[in-house]
Image 1 (spheres, one colour):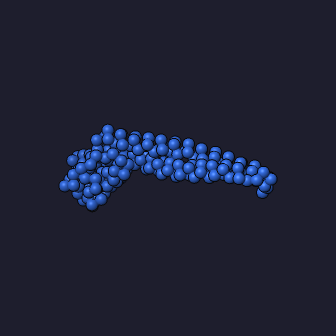
Image 2 (cartoon, rainbow, N blue to C red):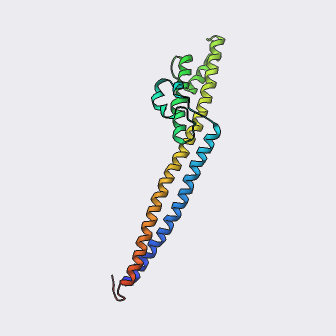
Image 3 (spheres, one colour):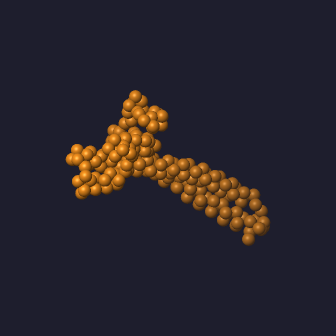
Length: 192
């Protein structure tokens, strides 16, 4: 095979890969911007905010101080609000009624057993019912916030992938251009 033919083939493939990577970079950048904008606007519409530092309490205060008084607008903030702030309050509510942190499923089972067996007072049964509703609402909000965190994380990953695709595309473009330039210097009769 002639060297010039081989160089044209390799340089053309490199140019095609450069074009493909640059297209991917644009699409990934669009995806990253869409995810980040969607998470920010949807969370901003919810108007969820961390309490000021004086309002933070318990085991998670040190971890939440960086967000004190701020509105939840990013996936990371949504995760912390869900996993630290809401969960701490859910555990405290369960401990007050059940004597220990409990899940919605555990409280619901206890409520149905207490209702069926009639071994608790109406006041205690109402406390368990209220706790069950609190835990259901808390888990629902936590799920929505954690979904925002997941979507935001995918946006961040897409942003990094866009940068990598852009760098790869530019690198392949430079190599392809160098290959085409080298073809002019290669003698006609050179073979591989």
